[in-house]
Length: 148
Ligand SMILES: [Fe+2]
Image (tube, rainbow, N blue to C red; front, side, top):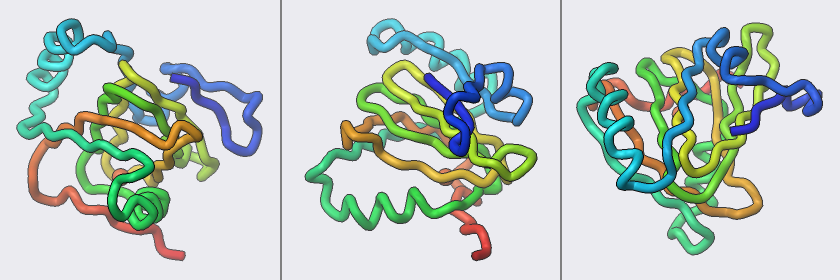
């Protein structure tokens, strides 16, 4: 994970800076055999009831529509929980001053975007990511786009 202010990329942010913004971050092992237990522990402790997997790559059908959707600033009324198992990408999240914080995630990074926090996602130059998505609930997890 590497995080910084989008407007001033030399201003780097660490996990404590993200935590001060309500964003939780863990670095887990990248090997499935090794991350299974810590992932399960987080899932149990935080009460996530569902898990699935999303995979994006250059030949994913409707990748450009999906990319547009993910890069539209939005929030959710539940947490957005992502554990990256391959590839990489950018989460942009608004800080308390409404500035963008950019978090570059790669395999082993687990990030929890709190409810009601405006954010967006973009692929990076590798153009591929595979994430496990965990859910607190299957209701209410829909994007609410920010008013233009
Ligand atoms: Fe989202």
